[in-house]
Length: 114
Image 1 (tube, rainbow, N blue to C red):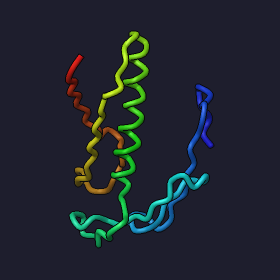
Image 2: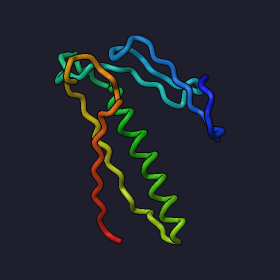
Image 3: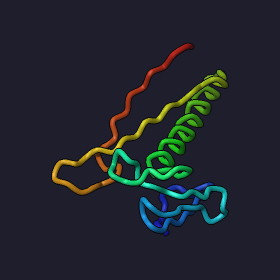
């Protein structure tokens, strides 16, 4: 486990086997999913499966939503109807290979309402 400059309040631990056509689950079993490569990526796109991109999107949207709520509360506001949409995608990298999120995340914000 890597050393942290700031002591974490909580850590989530997950194991995955079989790569993109395998199974992932957290040690506490709160998340347990079968994975399948999407048809658009040349895989079988099996029903009742998900992808790492789906999991990344859901986790990032929830995390950012929590940050929105925190910032609102710091300004004595409430954001009960805030909706965060995260849309990760997979595309080829110049030079081939994959570096996950390293220097590859474009972020755009749209804020509606007040």
